[in-house]
Length: 427
Image 1 (cartoon, rainbow, N blue to C red):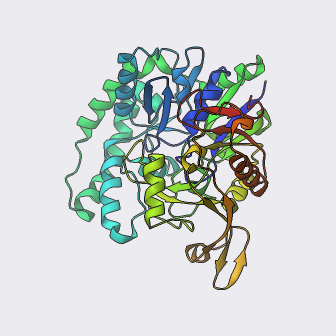
Image 2 (cartoon, helix red, strand yellow):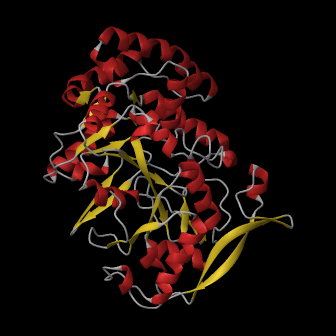
Image 3 (cartoon, helix red, strand yellow):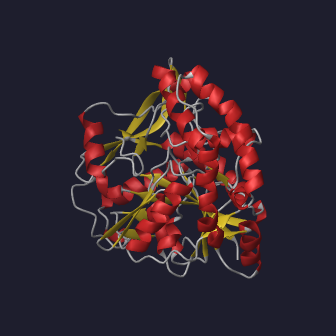
């Protein structure tokens, strides 16, 4: 059986947890392939709501093997706190697999992330301050600490001592902050070794073997296409590749194993942090979307910036990821509007752009060009088929589908497991 990749088609927070939970009940493995605890998924099962920050959403499905793959960066303290929280609620976490090659977020990564972001002032990126970027930087610089290093005290101590020679100089002499004691850091992370050991495996080998055996592997991305390090609104991006291309490298499987790419897209648009956002609403309409959609970060609690649906961004995501199916979320939030604006392109200094402008400067100065679609007044949260939606809601979906360049195969009309309309099979 092939692998299926799930990607965010906007700036993240599109509702990937809901999609993963839906599909995760039908697959054998659910794999987080990049990012860290700077992302969050909310999953609602009956009356229970789960906020997941590092663990794959598939951990809530008892017959699924959840995997934290090599492309993820792991804060072990956060990992075990999250595991304890699920265990206390009766969730079996024993099937979790963690790649030995995944990199660890260290205390000095968190310290540097926070002080450097404050130092940037108005030029700040808008990071979560959880050490994600500095960890990926050390990975690229080949001085990172991996999960497997905790099993070898000599290697762990050597890596930490060498790295802190440099990091402490930066903390104390550049930012006037207190340095970290290498021995304390070594002792802390050696303490995680036996806690990690039961979960650690060669996840790439296991996933490829599972595919060879005819099992289905679901690759779950965090963040979104416009936050991709290469293809997002750089420099206001994350430190990894949440696009479909990053899924293979982050999970350790070949691109020929993937047969379907599901793009998650909201019925409107949000983003967290700094950076361009052409359809952003800074008036009462934006606040209405925020309140109606509960647009607050799962991990940080920060207010999300809100705006209307941007079809140019959806087309871009289709192209970059090779999206085969869209999962449209939060359609119910738009109920009650007489007219719904949809961005179909941009005006940049009097020139129309039907696609995202090539340069950051032009995208910063892009003014949205809107078309207006008729809204609907009825509550759609009880709909259980596409035909039960009001005609104007159906027309809105079909118009977004045509503008985005890939079929909409599922629609979310509420947060619950049963509030998804599946137009065509996602698995």
